[in-house]
Image (cartoon, rainbow, N blue to C red; front, side, top):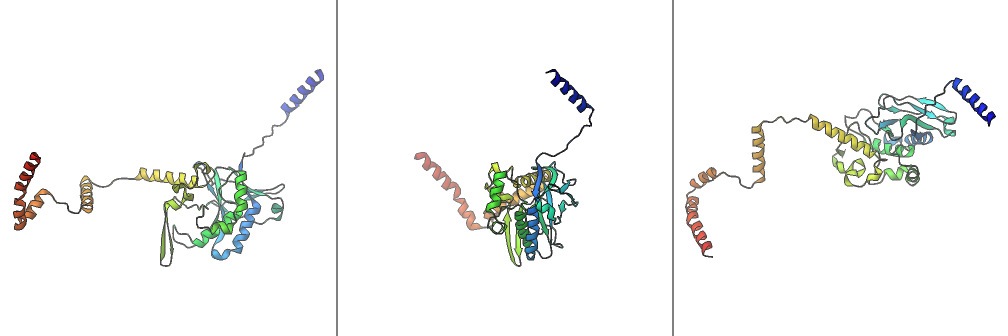
Length: 304
């Protein structure tokens, strides 16, 4: 017992005099499979005809309002591999092909918690007007994103299940695809056009059909659609704060009168009606019977 106490005191004294080592590691970091992202690059090269003038980049996006992606640090990490990844100002990056990282089944890791940001493929044809995307670019984004595993992050078993049963080609060709595209700003409607053909898509078909109740509340904590809904809500609140009513009371009265006239078959004031009757003798003679007829009807009601 005494020897054990002495050994403990010596160990404590040695530890107190030693240099303190601080290990900084992020719990539950955002990791994506490097191998899958390389497979996404290979699929892009294979199907480049869908977006012949575009290049593939990957993008990191915030899922929470307090997440700043401008100072995100990315790196490819394996058993022995550790390579930094350069992140552009717009949150996009590219990956090189490294045989050693593939052999070690490396991951692309970010210094952010797993639920704070998300990833997407980014394929954009240059030279398009503002707020315009090519359908070929979007179709290829879906396929590359699915192959690279850059989708909403579900819990382990669900994530493995979705990855096993959904192939990029079949999933992205379905009629109702839930793959989420991130725009530069919240959108509440989309117009598809090809030549003379045009089709409107309402907000009910956006945001993974959440507005139609097709994404259960329990799934939204994992689905990136919740991040998009939060962003759209914040945008609507800010727009409402900036809203100003720049009309006079007279303008409001005129608008109300115009609305009433548009909703009525005939809208006449009593003086206008009298002037209308007075200019038409036959209507005046007919109106003269109004008094006797009303008196006769009142007497009849009294007798009944």
